[in-house]
Length: 444
Image 1 (spheres, one colour):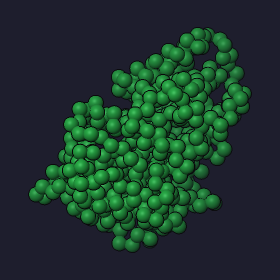
Image 2 (spheres, one colour):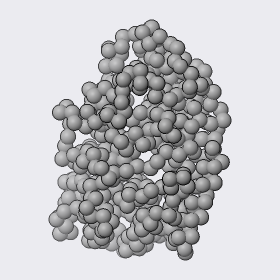
Image 3 (tube, one colour):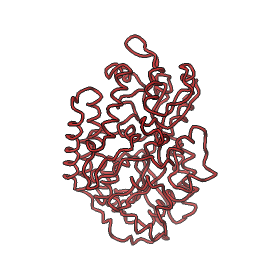
Image 4 (cartoon, one colour):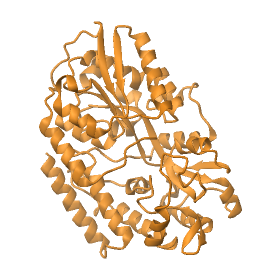
């Protein structure tokens, strides 16, 4: 989603999670005692920052306050996870009552540390059966070890956004469905220019904005952890197959160094200067927001969307993709948890609120009823991502006690693989498994 934070270094994330766990003072198991019918003001921190997104949040809050005239909401936008973690560690009046975060990877840490309160008692009191309200994959990334400490607030599906005009020029009639077709299309769409490119079929390196190892691995339907909780990168062939396929594509499109030199000239991901907008890449791995952003940037070509290709031996599963999204929870330090729950319940489960917010910021609704709502604005481009979100084989990355640290460790390893610095892939994956297991053990 626009404005979503990029993954940072493993060390930084581990440090932040460690401090959060050590400094959390909330009592997530204590029952909320405040009167939800009393006049009260609650604080709500969120990460959205662009004018259209902030207006969408404010409009949703205005509808909530109209339905709950005794509860006023003081919203603060552009709040990063670092700022949120600092406030939660401090506790007291400095901590927000309600938080939304783009970092689904932090759910395990939020739940395990007690920073966010368990929403189970609130859900039970309100008669909400989460399995009947939310898609199963979204529930996977909003809870940890049975603790439903967050709920989904819209979500994202990742697919392929492509330049239809460039496809026609290259003689490509339809988007690729398998990885071999993807490779062929990427080569046909690439136009070399000296030691650089006039146009690149796709930027395949893992620094290419949303082209992360986790997005690509989803197409192989991987299993990140064994039943007993051990890292499974070496155990599941999906990871080696994905890394091998990606590295091969990097080589076929000119090699790592040439591609990276070209990438350093790209405009910012959330600006009109994005390389897809400028025609520098003909295919872009991205989320449902990209077509609308490209149109707003005034691109001179027709835009197409499609699911990401699947491995050739999984052709029957074409249509699946990686799912992620925004999470919403209540600070365990809040003294206004019953009132805070009313806001969380409204924004995450009220069909009208979810649909209106999804329409306003071009994200995918996070409830089953909202996905079926006739009020949901569906364009040909957005339908692709809605279909990916509904696909039974679409998947996500599981929550862990130390948040997304294992993903960062895997990503760092993938960077080394694509550069050619890993002579023995199997041994490297096994070594990465051991590092992940060690980090998780330390976090428990």
